Image 1 (cartoon, rainbow, N blue to C red):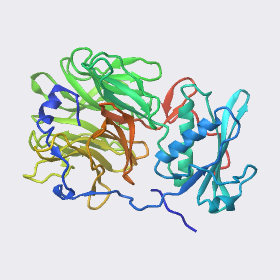
Image 2 (image 1 turned 120 degrees about the horizontal axis):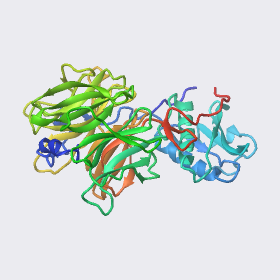
Image 3 (image 1 turned 30 degrees about the vertical axis):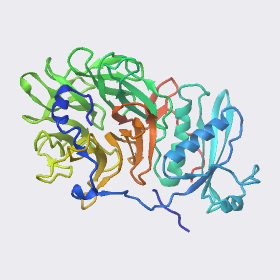
Image 4 (image 1 turned 45 degrees about the horizontal axis):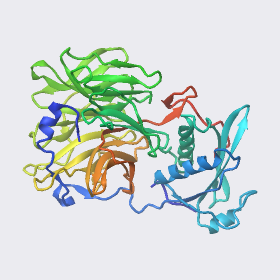
Length: 477
């Protein structure tokens, strides 16, 4: 038997705004046919989403809260339909597979909170109802409720469940950083961080100035961003382990630096600069060794907003070389070279496309924009170009409101973006497979969203990427 398978530059700099504002207030919500080769739809439309049930976890204490967090995570993964009520006479001793089959679920998750030598663990089992067997089981250490690592550790369990069923982990154990104006200070912008489920919103910078264009490092322990706090816009790197910060010294003393993007090796960043005399372009710098500034592209035109491909071999960026009112997305080799047009441009038709972000798992590039129409103010949409398909398919993922600054989740399936709807502003997440969109943070005028890599709790108060809490070895078939 088989079952269904897996299912704009806002406030970054005066210079950037100078050529982008000319098109701002002009990109419109057009029919798909207005943009060549673009369809409004979803890549995996019609794929079956398997139903899953979560039996109340045993053990008392935080057990009920843990089960609730996992249920939300699995729902937000868009890979399961989570049953929100249990059948009458639900089993408490052993698993009555026939009962759960009649209830119409493919999977059942059971769990219990246990304590060993003063350390709490969550023991979970994933039952395959169709094949009447245990698919996987594991034990995960869980910090005490109220500990900053509590929710992140639970998110890791959710990601493991996704991986057990679909072969690749989810994105629950991750965070999103963005820029917005703090309450009571409309003249500044600060960085804020929120969990992938919209919980735990907290302020990350206190520059009392403009802090914009943040980027997560691949190790999950650093964030690079641009700040005006020293006068000129410069790039800073924040160390999330000890709270320290340092200035990126690469470039001319009078240079202005914007939009850092980490290379996948984590040692280099690409960014765009404006130097004395009007020299501008995209450069790279070894941020770990503090050396080796390399200019990749320069010249008269503005080339900004770099983003590396998943292996670092290519770099996507924004350029106004076709005209200040038609900024477009280009791709070039990661070490510099000839650039090719990536966004859907047709001569004489115009169009505004910006905010490119390369998927961490595939050759797909997300960006925002649309066709110019002076009658409609500030209406942009989120697009994805699939470079892996023979026809370089382009899909538009949004159909209402204004949508900017997309950034990929570590699962390569979801995108976060800043948006506006008839009911207000916020930060949104869209599933590129089904098109399902959810509101992550309501009531904030956010910009420059960036999604972290997968994170874990190291046990010493540090959220890290790829290290820390891991499930104990168990029977995982």
